[in-house]
Image 1 (cartoon, rainbow, N blue to C red):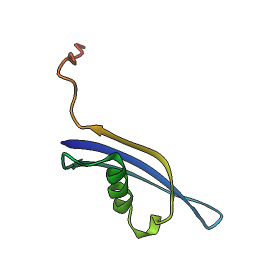
Image 2: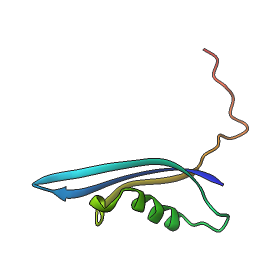
Image 3: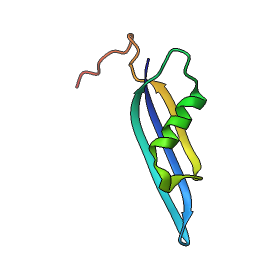
Image 4: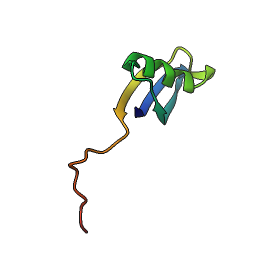
Length: 73
């Protein structure tokens, strides 16, 4: 199943904060967990964000409901 992952991290840096937001899609195995997806997303931030605090995390299926109707403009 494909998921949309959004992760925002913050880390103290030089009297302020360094922030990073990861926005990616990933195809996860059927036995994947949210914890596993979070770990994957943190790894995507790179070594400069190692030890950062998680400010926001979302892992949602990357599909719209079949009952969703198009909005006519």
